[in-house]
Every structure is written in C-alpha cells, then in structure tokens.
Image 1 (cartoon, helix red, strand yellow):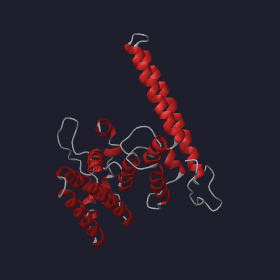
Image 2: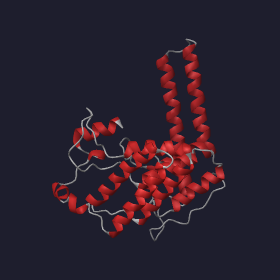
Image 3: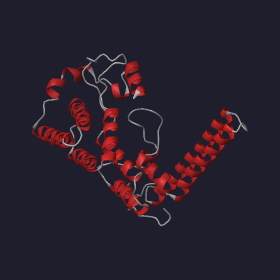
Image 4: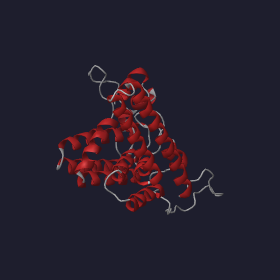
Length: 279
C-alpha cells in the first residue's frame, strides 16, 4: 500500500493514474448509468448489503472498491460486462461462506481501492482515481486463498484447471507466468498457479520445504555463534531463490502439460486442457 501511495504521489501512475483532461471534463455525463449500468449498480449494492449483514467493515470496503470499479468503467468507457459481475458474485459468495476468506477479501478491497488520501492524510481533490486490479484480480485472490486452504491435491487441481479454462479470466501462458501486480512490483507467476505449485506439486512443495529447513538451520547456526547473522541471511535468501527457481520451472512444465505450451496451436487456440498424472 505504501508503494501505491508513493507511486501515485510521484507521477500519478499505477493506482493514481489521471485520465486525459477531456475525459475528466466529461466525467459527469459519462458516469451517468444507462439501463444496464443501473442494473449492474443495483447488483453491486445487493452484494454490499449481503456483506453488511455479516461484516460491516467488509461491506464498507466493498462499497468503496465497487464505486471505484464503476467510476473507472464509466470514465474509461469500458462498461462492466456480465462476466465481471459474475466473478464479483462468486467472490462475494465465498466471502459470505468463509470467515477466513472474508478477512482476506476485506484486506484485498482496502489494498486495491482508489487512493483517496495524500501521504499526509489530507483528502485528494483531483477527481477520478484508478483502482488497482478488477473483478478478475479479486477472483484470482479467491482462488489463491482456496488453493492455499484445506483442499486436497485433486480438488485443488480441478479448481485450477477450471479457472484456466474459464474464458471470463482471459488467461494466456504469458499472463500466467509474467503477471504484473496491479498494486505495483516485479512480475510474478499468477498467484493461484503459484499456490498450486508450492503446495500441491511434489517437486514444488519439496523445494519450498527444503528452503525453509535450510533457512532454519542457518539461523540456528547463527544463534550458536557458528556463523554470523549476515551469513545466515545470505544462506536463507539463496535457499529461497533456488526454491523460487524450481517453482518457476514447475509452473512452466505444468502449463505445457496442460496445453499452455510455448507454441500455440495452428489455429491460434490452445489444445484442450488435461489433468496430468504427474501433478
């Protein structure tokens, strides 16, 4: 969140991106909802009301994020689609069902909502502020949470493969391996895919466990005075870097096995996804 605030202060990029002056001058008329926009707004308000019945903080955070989502759609003339509302509905339904995810979702909403304050706490008056992420980002957070939860390997695999097949998410090999976090930072593996690799893929999870063991051992040695703290930190970072490399390799291999190989099919479409016995 600090990065997002600093980024907005230093150039109005990322979460603080300002639209062209002409778009701002037309904000009032552009934001006026048509029949479809009004229906979408009512649907989002119902989701907020459902959340309010179980968690006031979650409902307030959702209302703020949803307003940003609607404003952004109107200003950029990219209306919310039915698919967007379906994804939001699914995420809200999970938040209503799961107390643990509800807290995760609330944190997500706060992190990705429009930036309304300057670093000194004073309110912004520049008007439109772009939110970080969208309905797909929220849905990905839900998938990541579920895959990292108590699901068995088979259930986690089917959940992930269903997401890869879902046309509403618009996933490709490139976006799966090189996602740019909407709140800033270096590119990363799509979080639900990474969660599956580090928790449910045998090689991926083994690499993470080995890194954790090596890091713990290094700090025990530091406590015993056998190595200094700097050496322990260096060993821990090297072990984690190796584990991350294994995660990247396994993600690439699994995507290829599932039909997201480096070369697309002749007609530009991916072959049908398939579950691998080696996952």
